[in-house]
Image (cartoon, rainbow, N blue to C red):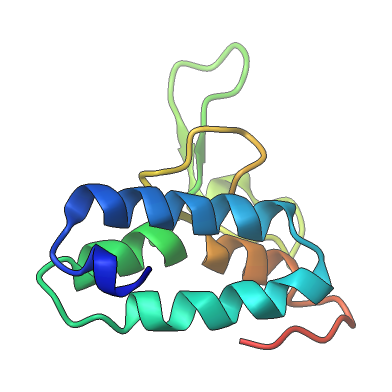
Length: 119
């Protein structure tokens, strides 16, 4: 499947979206097989390599929010109430649902847990 995506933007986009959905719905046991399948897909050296990396892993973006009865948005540190909260997130342009997150966002959520994740 990875070789079919070489220099094919549309198929690479679809496969990246499948990986994101799979990471969001999988448990720890299935995650290992998805990561093994992701490796050859991301290692393809073509003109879309950087775009595929951004789709799957996401790119950093400062958190922003407009609260009720305020005219201005709050950005980054202004939104933090506790010391362990993040001022940024990793967004992917393929994400459309509320429950979908890029791979880096999922890793940040799991960083303080005692689960064993392999990446």
